[in-house]
Amino acid sequence: MEKSSNLKDATDKPSLRKTERSLPIALLRARETVMIPIRELLQESNISEQKWRVLRVVEEKGALEQTAIAEAACLLLPSLTRIVQSLEADGFLTRQPDSSDRRKTIVEITDIGRDLIAANTPKSNEIYQRLEKSFGKKKMNDLLDLLEELQHLRL
Amino acid sequence: MEKSSNLKDATDKPSLRKTERSLPIALLRARETVMIPIRELLQESNISEQKWRVLRVVEEKGALEQTAIAEAACLLLPSLTRIVQSLEADGFLTRQPDSSDRRKTIVEITDIGRDLIAANTPKSNEIYQRLEKSFGKKKMNDLLDLLEELQHLRL
DNA sequence: TATTGTTATACTCTATAACTATA
DNA sequence: TATAGTTATAGAGTATAACAATA
Image 1 (cartoon, chains in turn brown, orange, yellow, red):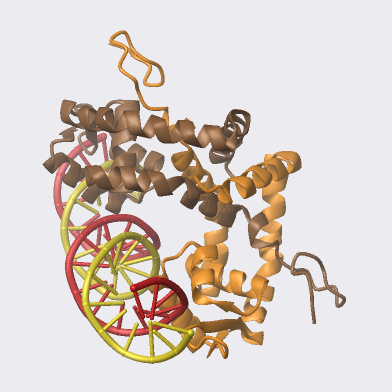
Image 2 (cartoon, rainbow over the protein chains, first blue to last red; image 1 turned 180 degrees about the vertical axis):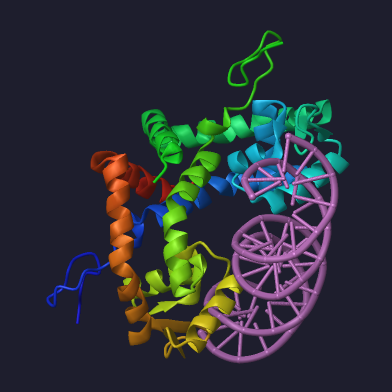
């Protein structure tokens, strides 16, 4: 018996959306597509996706406490603790206690960290341009606008 | 010294996009936002995100070989092997060798598996409607259209 | 008492390679 | 030789709880 899993069937049971119209699945699949060339790039620098995200967040936002980094990099605090310790050991960033609230650890990027980002920037921009070319500049911007709005929603 | 990390600076070094305009990061953050209520839902059924994706793919596409499931559920084959074995042990799906090519294992959902999906469908649809309401129906559909196209791009 | 971050833990997923069976 | 899937393994992330230091 053929049946569409996207519509109510004869017995009128409600059914789930097709996986292509499931937002979490669509976001994940789209991300997998985009990540393929980026994973190649990061492998050359021998740096994980997570470390790369942390480094970019810290570069972008300047001196930052760890809770804020975890939020921005989509990582849990225990995961972040390990990653930041590893990045500090490699000299990519520094940690120092906040002078006004000594529970906090303030993280900053170092010149070595900035160099790592700079070293990957040309190829990263190349990938971005290739993506813009095959997907379309307008669609790309529309998508980024929608994602930016969605990521700030609090449901 | 203040500087925008999104534009070339005075020394004309090329720089990276802001993380909000990085497609992989924006996709991930948006997904985290959307997953918050869904994680609650899945925890009640005591099923992992990955198992849920596999179950939905198998329900949607019918009898399917594992390589195709891995692709559709964004999982590596070794991860899928374990997940499918676990879902089979719990009675949610069956495995049988393909009669025309016995290297392949064909996976199908069982009634118990369908029941699990059905049990979660009302709350899942509720979450979806809440999301549509706060994000907007048109934006939601535009976003899904863009993601659908992006996930099928081959860079 | 609440918050920030660390440590401990058990579990899961990732990534790769080696292997089996089949084509 | 190539493909489909399994197994093994090391490493990393997830998720939770317990803990220390500070507020």
